[in-house]
Image 1: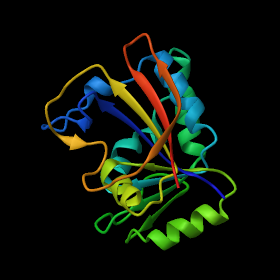
Image 2 (image 1 turned 120 degrees about the vertical axis):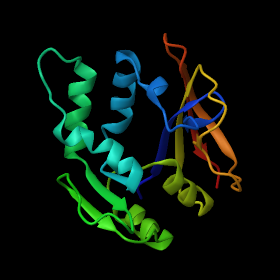
Image 3 (image 1 turned 120 degrees about the horizontal axis):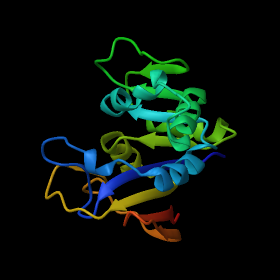
Amino acid sequence: MAKLIYASICSLDGYVSDADGNFSWARPDDELHAFVNDIERPIHTYLYGRRMYETMVFWETAEVSPDQCEPVSDYAGIWRATEKVVFSRSLDQVSSAKTRIEREFDPEAIRQLKRDAERDISIGGPELAGEAIREGLVDEYHLFVNPILVGGGNRALPNGARVDLELLDERRFDSGVIHLHYRARR
């Protein structure tokens, strides 16, 4: 059975973007980007909400040139090779290959996807991930905590959910980012 994995780059106070929707402070340096790529490489399917998909679809057409840093070029290839499911009631069409739209988030369909998948699944976007967390679907968490307080905005983790976690790993990066890797205790 595949694991459902939630990875989030967030501020120390737990936000993926500030009150104005800005997340430029979350841009990873080469060291962190390469580490994230290694986490993403084995993923078979990305599950996105509409807003996260609209942010990530950049990678479909991102220019990959010899003068770009290796982690950026590498991630573009990882993203393009991965299946994507976008959960949206308003999106009419997708602008990337290997992508389909689902109108409703169905927890039982995600359970079946986990049972059927041979490789792990990633869920992106705090709203969609919040639904999955509240349903007990998320198996592992990768939190990349940035050394910044933004004071409000879009929360990385949902209110109203309680999940007991086991720390699997942690790592400190030169940029001051801390990676925390947890597994849900069942």
